[in-house]
Length: 140
Image (cartoon, rainbow, N blue to C red; front, side, top):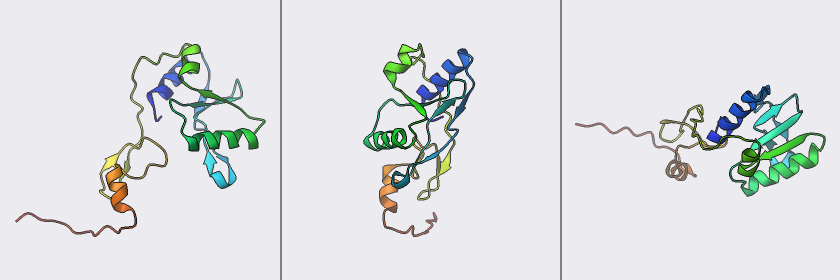
């Protein structure tokens, strides 16, 4: 999971005896790419998207999802919604994100978003239109 709120929501689902799946299905949105809701609860037949902050690109994808897949129910679980159902957001949980290797500097890091490829903005900027030289420096 990518955020402590997602972990909190999963714990709330467990405590309420809901069987859930995390990022269970990806939906094709045509020119906007794809969209994968965070949770699916089969007993309710509802998808949940846990969001602390809704960026414009995320808003566009959610709107397109609702337009194309109008037969699917999607709930945006923001702070207000999570608090209203009794989800405890006061605890900070490790999101336990899988680590990937930065293609520029080769360090292992846990991306904050699915599309994040580089460990930092610095590495991303360095790689923008440039090839890595592959020069190794040795101490004498």
